[in-house]
Length: 394
Ligand SMILES: Cc1cc2nc3c(=O)[nH]c(=O)nc-3n(C[C@H](O)[C@H](O)[C@H](O)COP(=O)(O)OP(=O)(O)OC[C@H]3O[C@@H](n4cnc5c(N)ncnc54)[C@H](O)[C@@H]3O)c2cc1C
Image (cartoon, rainbow, N blue to C red):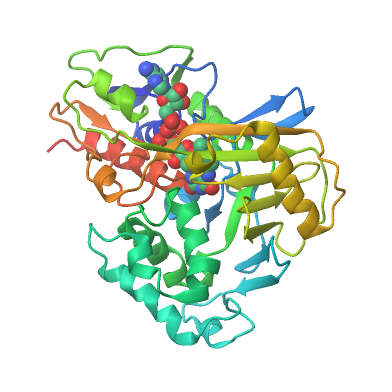
């Protein structure tokens, strides 16, 4: 069968690979001059180096993402610490601590005060079990917000980065799904991982090469404006485009932004290569070769700050916390305005499933009803599901 895949983000690429593997001929249409969508690298003239549109972290329990990388031969292009460790610094007090999970399935690290979040009690970790019983209406803050330091120093930062939504508005269920596939399975499923060279080098370019080698027809700069009747098609575009292509489709309509700041500077990568930050604007910092990159999720709350101000404030936090030179180095501030859908209960209820009313058209994208937050894992899983739905009509 010949299949049209519309959109060469991770969902479209995963669908294209899955269909190609199953012996189908794929024509991949991408509106932009390059693939990758919201996960891509580019050469930044101002900084004089290649950067990613934003820091992307995976956990080793993201099995669909890892299988995708294995398929395209890029599994080894991820890096991260050998142990499941998460170093944190508080940018206001300077306090430093490291969450040290153990590799195996039984979480004995919880019993060791030096491995868990300082100031937390063993019983507070039991609050995580509440996520298993979370209803669709529960939000993260109301379910977990009474667990003291554990909430403020771990669960809140975790929820903001995993759901890209402030905990007061974020549905608890998808956070439960993430934890069930990672921390609850043990440290071996919670190893932090990210692209060694860049997002495109890991997730995108090897997939394009893999597809081309197997005869796929990849067309950049081709914006699809209508579907061809009767043509088997995977629609893997953002929700607002999907609604134009499929009139009457219900899709999420509210979004959250992510702000990434790239500073042309160096710092000691420490034990893990990254830190979680609390007490300020900065949330995660990655020490790359000659670029220090900072992520601020659920960044709609800072939309009225201009780029210079945010760069100065973030650098001030880094310089104080890590004893770096106070002068703000050359930098690039990147706002992805519609980085992900808002993970509120109301918006998640608008996520459509894989199949549409038309049996020859299926949907893929991190915004579809994967049960996961809008992440790489969700996008790839949705692409695989779309491919399987197309070849297995009801
Ligand atoms: C700054 C940032 C940081 C993030 N951090 C993380 C992280 O740490 N961990 C994680 O797991 N996830 C993270 N994410 C989320 C992750 O990037 C997304 O979940 C994933 O990339 C979504 O892929 P997708 O294929 O669903 O959508 P997209 O990447 O949006 O792909 C859709 C594609 O469709 C194309 N298209 C649109 N209209 C048309 C048309 N008419 N015809 C043809 N093509 C069209 C677009 O150009 C695009 O390439 C982050 C996202 C951002 C923006």
